[in-house]
Amino acid sequence: MNKQIFLTWAIAVAILYSCRNEAEIYPPEIVQLAPPDAGRVAGFYLLNEGNMGSNKSTLDYYDYGTGEYRRNIFADANPSVPKELGDVGNDIKIYGSKLYAVINCSNKIEVMDKRTARRLGQIDVPNCRYIRFHNGYAYISSYAGPVELNPHYEQLGYVAKVDTASLLVIDRCLVGFQPDELEIADGKIYVANSGGYMFPNYEKTVSVIDLESFKEIKRIEVARNLHRLRADRHGNLWVSSRGDYYAQPSRLYRIDRTRDETADSIDIAVSNFHLDGDSLYLYSTEWSYISMSNEVTYGIVDVAKRAIVTRSFITDGTDQQIKIPYGIMVHPLTKDIYVTDAKNYVSPGTLYCFGSDGRLKWNVRTGDIPAHFVFLED
Image 1 (cartoon, rainbow, N blue to C red):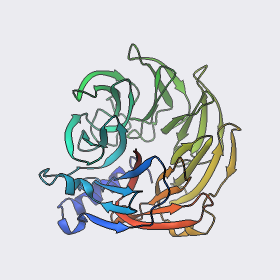
Image 2 (image 1 turned 180 degrees about the vertical axis):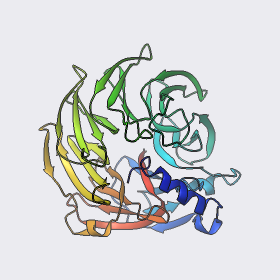
Image 3 (image 1 turned 120 degrees about the vertical axis):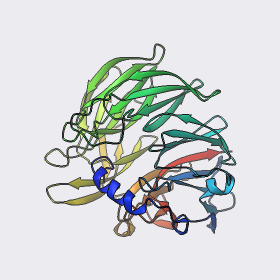
Image 4 (image 1 turned 90 degrees about the vertical axis):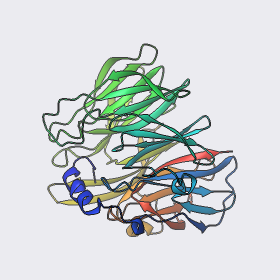
């Protein structure tokens, strides 16, 4: 399900859940799981988005050394923060000694110590979406305007440049409407413009920003309603299009970074992906207004060969238990595959861990709408 397209539904849910019930926010818990041989990776954080309007974003942590999965650790580490993480966790990354959580509707990036999750400060960016880093700066995509479905939306989005020492926004670069993921490669920032609030007038371009001048230098025509971006080691940029939910399906596109032009596409639907070496692990929950249902699929694309390797990396039938896949990550050493299930979007989700053979190892309950991962290295 696309959060932008289903904004009306989300707002209705928010009204129902707007009075925060402490019983619905799980207190910090520890679940003992079997520790893997994880090498240099100490563990991972999982950011749970929480229901829009309900201030229920939470942070979980899995410790590879002890095998402990700890829920809602931000609340435990920061008991004096009154609203905890806030409203809708949209991205999470580590840079240097700090952990950055992008909290979309709270208009902030929560900055924490990467080992303790203790709060260090915040960066104020309206309707912030995704974050990347380069040479001491954070780059954050922002919708800039309010949360509003409007085919005639007038506020262009931008990328904010932030000094990671002072946590201050020092510059902004205008891009297209409702910019989502961004990637940094070859001295440039690539930004997927979605136009997600402007149904049916979606954006179709990737903005290209020169890092040195921090100016937009080009827009690459791709497809409707862009979302995810990832650069590979072969000079390509892989971009997902969510389509229009009617006649134009979701699809994976390849941009040639040497020419900054769309080269071709692969006929596979994509909601989210994780690039591990040359393997692009992906899933899709593709909504159709024609069938009024989601079609859930999984797959792996070999980015070197530009070909689909498999359309199902879960081999033991567990995929039938997953209602709404919502997050994905692959361990760089063990090659374990992590997939989250958002279920009905308003109750606790589930994290599934699969081995490299696609068979289930374990699963655990998470917060509401488990979505975004980041590894913590020793």
